[in-house]
Image 1: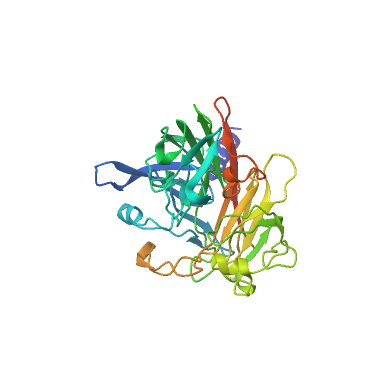
Image 2 (image 1 turned 60 degrees about the vertical axis):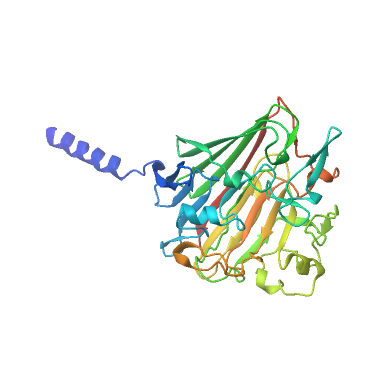
Amino acid sequence: MKSALAGFATLLTITAASLPAATTVKKSEFGKLPDGTTVSLYTLTNAKGMEAKIITRGGVLVSLKTPDRKGAMADVVLGHDTLADYVADRSTYFGALIGRYANRIGHATFTLNGTVYKLPKNDGENSLHGGNEGFDKRIWSAKEVPGGLELTYLSKDGEEGYPGNLTAVVTYKLSDDNRLQIHYTATTDKPTIINLTNHSYWNLRAEGDILNHTVMLNADRYTPVDAGLIPTGELAPVAGTPFDFRKPTTPGARINQPDPQLKLGRGYDHNWVLNRNGNGLSLAARIEDPASGRVMEVYTDQPGIQFYTGNFLNGSVKGKGGKPANLHSAFCFETQHFPDSPNKPQFPSVVLKPGEKYDTTTEFRFSAK
């Protein structure tokens, strides 16, 4: 009996040791800003070895390593090696949290409750991604939570022209089934507008361009734009256009067609109106790299998604390892409310009032086939 019990105890020890551990979170220093502020790096690692790295400046997802069909890990997001490079780069928004309003607001102005608010013009005549010093350039306070990291930022009344003291809380969580979840909440003390997203640039092959990735977008309509990339207000059908990704299609198959909308965006840089039932998470997009087998699915409760094919990347910005970020070297899937919604009453509302809670979730689910 003693021998049997000892063997059973040994079996228990071995079994317990082999059980997958929950996602671990490790903190380190990423660098210091010129004013001496320390920027921290948090590394999230799940039981399968998938790894996400996030810094407290801009809440940037600086790295995400996920396996291909052979189990080989690779970093599938564009970014920089150093804090100094992130600070110097004011054009790409690599991996950053975007706010107070993601995407564009026409003529850098909007009216709320009879008051006209003027915003910085940092994209021609328009305001882009929250202005000159948006959430992507701010220092977020951080704390570890089970399975992830919680970031908090107080955007003060009048910051970049927006009304209200707005407290934003964004939580990154990495699960053992290879899901990266981003949960956004916010509250305000005055009526304001809000539209938060993450601006990661993905390349599932981790090299080359993304024109041969296969894309599915769960959307029957999209929002055409004018010359300033501001939506016209129309919800146009994708059927019969290069914007129909309801069946898996490569961006490269139609990106160079002589379509007026493609010419305006220099490729795909548009908002798709997602097909949705109910208020929970639903499939917005799926993209697959045939070479590596990596698959990414995007689930969200947001009404829209911006699909951007890196049309403004021209090699002038150097990424990790000094490698140039070239044309079409990555794509973005930015879950969001529609661009210029504050000036388009027919679009879903982006107004947040005191006593209300902005609460939205997006998940990036990874696999390989």
